Image (cartoon, rainbow, N blue to C red):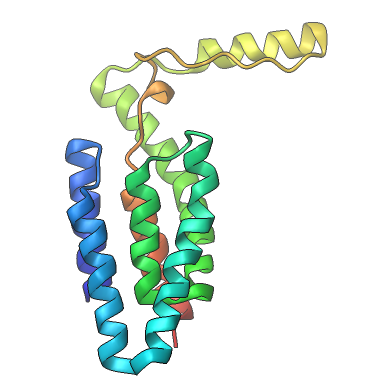
Length: 170
């Protein structure tokens, strides 16, 4: 229940404010470690710590490449305290799959309901460059474009963690 509660709260806050507060992620991690210690003793606490480290290690490259925010890193790490290391790996993989769908749906939402510019012109420009010159080019999205907006990823991370808990946890 704690995993679902944290996932829902983080998702709502990320959708509303585009940030996940430290009090939520750090508090969730602390509660996860305390629950592990109380329910399983020191071995479970060690498993929770390994899950936390697994979440951090998996998300840090995306953060360093500026592909994800710090709150997203801390959220998966907090979920790792509840899941342990191997289910946290599965949660990360499920998050990646969910994020692909989520980002596409969010882009369509921003385009259709918020008036964002569709990326078709930018994609066409990159495709023309590829076909004419054989060179791959990348044109950054404009801030007004649907794909230029920051996508709140807490819903995708929460879906991945909850699915991993249901499918892979003992």
